[in-house]
Length: 237
Image (cartoon, rainbow, N blue to C red; front, side, top):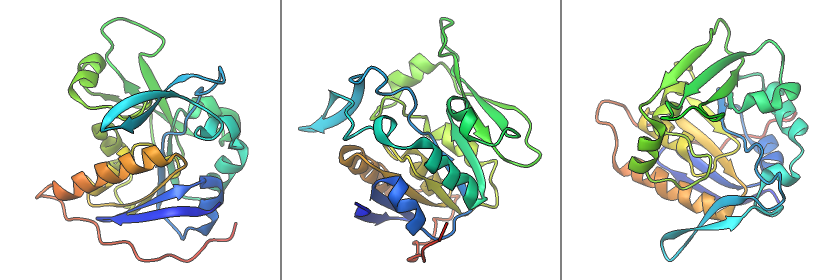
């Protein structure tokens, strides 16, 4: 299995496949902005994965066939990201700290929970030079969840991913090897960047395509749209 399906929508390239097999086929890119699954499937059947039947979201159990966290060798994937040598922002990086360079800096998403919990926020590891710890705050997380449609159990707000891209002003091509429902690529489309997203689950891949298409149809009039992506040559690790 390499590339099972590929769609180019607006300035975004969406790939259905295993990121471990697809990443070596990609050309150069400027940065990685991603949110790898972590903790999912720890009980071998955790609920929270969402599929769409008849246009409505339906919960289904995580299985080795649809969950990277159950069967993907993390060390190889993060080694590949590090060896690409580009700027990286990896949400949940604290869960993979043993696989990432120790000199990284951190970003913090303050979820503004109404009641204090262990999920008050999330950390992202970065290798950005000169970066200092930064905090992102976007309203009340419970209210945001009610206002914004959720397609994925760990879906991030579009504004959060736009904030991440703000730390990468010179990066025009962004890789997200764990695309999920496509939030990173939606942010790229809205900000005039070119994104490459890889997703293992066909249901989420379809959702990501739909969301990116909607973002393409509703452009920001003050942002130039990204150029359509050319076919890229492979990169040998």
